[in-house]
Length: 241
Image (tube, rainbow, N blue to C red; front, side):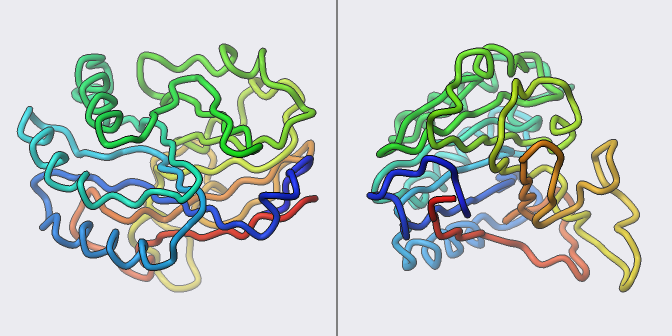
């Protein structure tokens, strides 16, 4: 991951992205715990989470999340995250659900960025709140960021890349949300994607005006089925552009 203005102390460090855990009633959460334990063996320097921590139906998901959070992967230098649409409960509109999830992460030592930025050892991480939910306001942070910093954007829904909110930003954007379609017939596009832009499926995508998007295929799932789309935890090695 080549980043402009990256300080020398971060060259060669690792950044791990984990997305779309979807703790809920649809599968055994020991799978997530076991995945976290495997990820911890890589000893990442920075860890970022890109939303959808629960598949919210009722308050039971808060307890289920509490059972998973003691095993969560943290970076040696720092850890931050953002919210996804499922973290806002019914119709993506329940602020109290989002606030509760943020509180649970804060108690675990992880700050959730809600149209905010956080500097970790010289890397300025900008976090958008979810596009479909009720607190989406990227201008609140993009009007204040500096291009002279080493910047990285976390944005759960990649459709935001097509909006006029970037204020000259050049650099990487890390997203999730799509699960890579979860099922993909060979040689064909995934038949179901929760995005307007069909190009936003998974992996690395070059955008216009110096921006580069990476869409994580998700660790968890909404429906308990995958075909030709493996779950993913991503590790980047940082370098100065």
